[in-house]
Length: 318
Image: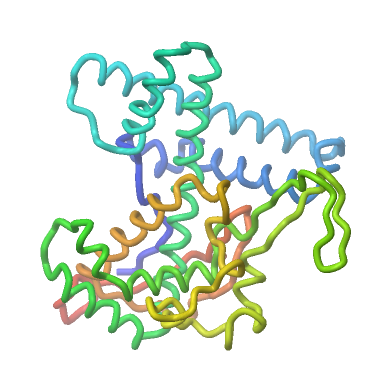
């Protein structure tokens, strides 16, 4: 059975058909918004070019669709909570609980919009980036069978055939963590971050004026000999607990107080999904698999990841 690995890891308790049905505009809206973000970040004149007006309007409509859909889901979940219904203990419920104390003090639209901002951020950024990270992980494991066998053995030793995975199990799967971190070094799904300079400063003799936007490219840093020996080699041992920490040159979730809001959730999400995949399935890359990368604001395998997959223990491809 050939499988195309590029799915949504988490649905926040909503109808999966909304995201997976090719007839719905939701998946396209996410991609369109990300593409619009890239154009604005990389070309400050983009929005002023009349030739781009049609695309800009498409981005606005896509953003409106995402926010309207998010607002609808938030309202439905709030009503369910208020009516005492049994609701999923997911990110959406947590956002509502966290916002509850704030909304009690100030019921203005700003707080409602902030709650919606947080939801859309988790939904769009978390879904897209984590799915792509998992795809890149499978791609690398598929062409490095010795690493695949080692991480599979760790999963077998820690969780065996148990369905539930505890926090303690996640802590014990250290080699799987190393594999996922090494994947993000070579393929940071959010390849760059930016900062605005609050005051004039000089860095390595280069004068940077106030308000100037500085971009930092995690993709480039992760592939530099200056920071990593033999940087193009996929080597999880770089992130062994006893290895030196790669400070300031490894930042797939950005750094500092404005680092990614969903960093901990994304790491746990990827680890759980990958552990369950390794626990249940054997897979190998289809001959001719492309390893090209596509940049659409986030990095993804250009042609997806094509695998032969079977339930573990089977002798033939299922």
